[in-house]
Image (cartoon, rainbow, N blue to C red; front, side, top):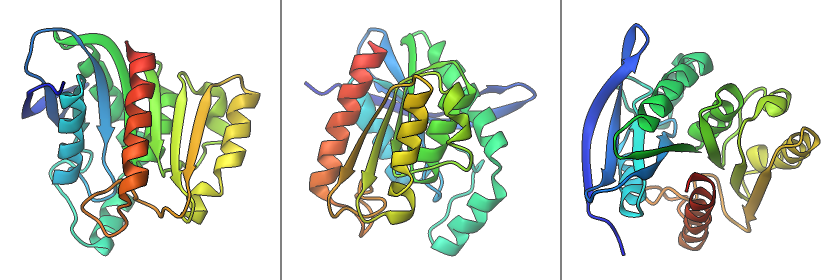
Length: 228
């Protein structure tokens, strides 16, 4: 049974600055597992807020941080410019603050996972490699620049979900899997036949309903296993 959702924009500290984010949670009493929802290169757009709402309806507390600090894109060239202006170090700094804030909320059970899409998928992995606050991380069709080298420091189980025709990103999955397993890390991957990049985004022409539904079910099961 779906939970009724309460949502709002919030701010929380990040050392000398603040991070803004979209918070969605179940309205009923209880302590729920947390999920950091990490944006695509478009920014904190309605689709990402909707994903946070979906997690809340399933019994999670979700925060989608605004990594672009108030900016968002509607065209690919604008998105590219915003993505290039964001350093991985700055983004991970904001994501660490998000995860810490999420774990400390009174309606959180203290366990936090991350899920990211495209650019955010790579950041979900990097957060797992640079912070010990996560208990699980999900990658939707993303990669990060030093993911092989960072395999040794990944602190939690990884679930990777990819489209078959997304050759540049999906082609790197076997090497990533091997590197993680060589370092004693846990990774599950699934590649969807015929699916392109961004197959989960139901606001884009790339959306593939069957693959998206299966990936969502796998994500929920993965988080319920590791964040209970």
